[in-house]
Image 1: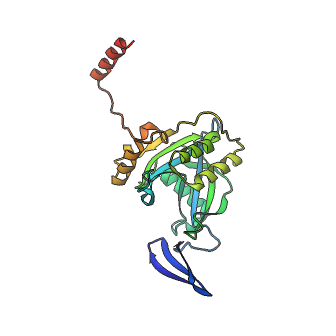
Image 2: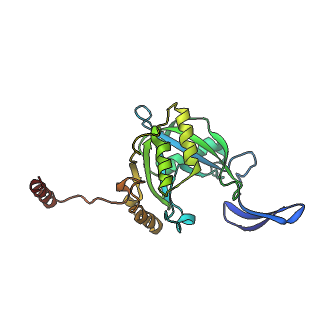
Image 3: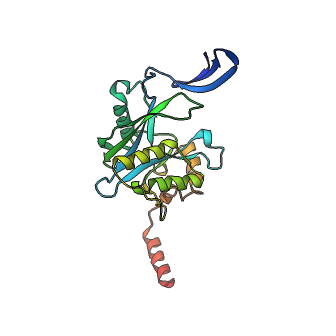
Length: 260
């Protein structure tokens, strides 16, 4: 038996009670909406692959997430593209929803979408939902079409080094989502690439940063936190370089002469 404790547009907090023992209760979050179905995943996640004809790279996002902001990592996350399978895309199916999320959040077009991994749970003790994880080979340049108020940066790492990079980021205190690792592993499998675990951790390549797009207060908090954690994301994600003037260029030239 369930009873509602509170709800938002897409989620509902419920308390479950065992039918034979009223002392056995459990509270968790349920997804709701016109799209909700027991045989359909509630959200989609996409592992985008770019430069697939040279050295394939996988693209990730960094966000600042309010539920984690009080922790030592200041709420900084690494995660793939994803979103709820809302009623807006319910008629188009999960693949269409995944393509829409990819285009809106990154501006990338899909050239090939691989068969998804389905029914992947989130936190099995705290929510009832599940997701489908897609691997998408993409074309074009990253240019988000919608403004995500929590997004800090979009970046890529070589696919072969992706697991090594994600594990290192986890050890250093960044919240790496489970679906980031599952998506990267599935991409390695689909593209038949052997992961590398030895050698240097790859430096991420910045593709987009909130600092160039009038960041809101929450993004400013996240960018300030990233200044203390530049090893996780490209330094350019947190430092907007001003174009140097002619005089500063001359001064820099003189300084270089005397420093030799």
